[in-house]
Picture 1 (cartoon, helix red, strand yellow):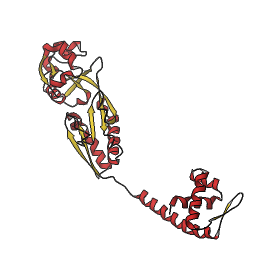
Picture 2: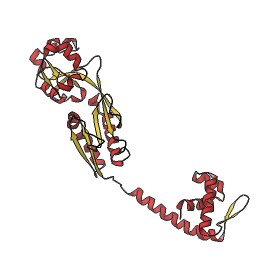
Picture 3: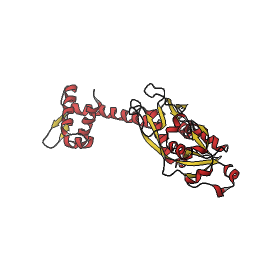
Picture 4: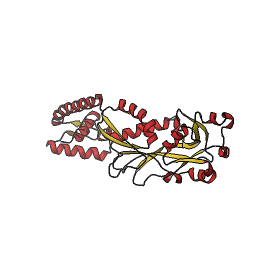
Length: 294
């Protein structure tokens, strides 16, 4: 038997009319009429006497009312039991992230996620290479792209400006704060850390090669490596602000402004899985509150 039909029966019994029952259940009049007729056919007799302005229970209706109230009470008990449960989704979620995000941001974000959802296991896949979400190499991806692949869905969780950085002792070796550059033009008298391989094509490195090629004495194909070269005193490095940490001094933001879009992505087939939705929401909240990325 259809419990929805019994809901209609109870609503009519309590209100005395089809129209009032329809309003109580937020359905239309014809739905109430159809379900009542189907229930009466199934029960083998009329449950209500039809009067011009009201519906009154028949003898059979009175008997069914007792049973329906018992069923209603049982459903209420079930709903309360489920609502009272501290339900925790379970399972594994794999997430891929660039080196620096994985090292300096995810550990704290995932610690609070684990406290909230201890039965969800998270696997972190570290690397700047793209894992294939189509092949389920990862469930969630954090990527710094101008535009993500069309086959993935997600949102921008941060627009990260780029700045010029140096190691904490670099300026002292050059004569102190009086030689600290405040614009790109003032970098002419400093050693500069350049990009190599695929990174040379990423803004702002083409401009750097064009304007400061004679001052570049060391190069790297990885932003993390560039940041550690700067920390060691090799010169100035242009880096996204997510690289900021102790050991580095941020001198000024690059002008004209350069920003990296940080995307949080998943495959369309996975976006409605509860554990993946929870992780994406948690990470989105964390990134949007992250002051280090401003």
